[in-house]
Amino acid sequence: MKKSIFILGILLTVSSALFSQNTFTLFSKDLGGQATLTEEFNGFGCVGKNQSPQLTWKNAPKETKSFAITMYDPDAPTGSGWWHWVVFDIPKNVNELVAGAGNVSLNLAPKTAIQSVTDYGAKGYGGPCPPEGHGFHQYIITVYALKTDKLGLDENANPATVGYYLWNNTLAKASIVTYYQKEKK
Image 1 (cartoon, one colour):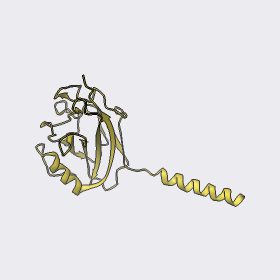
Image 2: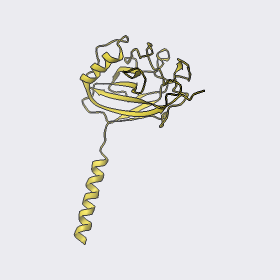
Image 3: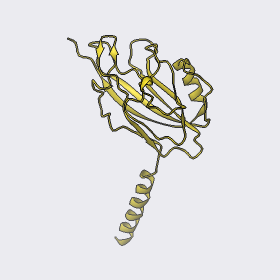
Image 4: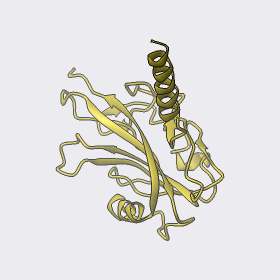
């Protein structure tokens, strides 16, 4: 009996150590399970505030030289999804974007960060705006820890090109998924 309790104690200690590892993780003070009118796009029939959420990340790999962030809707009825936000060349010493950093005119993002064009055809954040009555869409916000300090792209790079460069330079990534739908009127 004592031997069984001892073995159980060892197993609990080992399993808790395994599950408490410090992994690369993305958080938001603003987002829960569903986006709100604060994040919703203002245009295309949507009337939200179009404010990018606050984002914080931690435990990036030691080799990280920069970060990038994307927001993608795989449920958009386009055949290829919809890119809502593409930010790259975020310095390695930065681990947060404040709410509203996706508005390029406010200059809230780090100075070296580049916010390139989205599928809305504009630079910076473009919030959720699913078609009316199309149901819930998922919005995947991902932070990438990169092995290069610069991607070598500019603000006119399209999401597919940025995605290719991200794919070739990613050390680790972490995501938050939030959902949004626009009700039929």
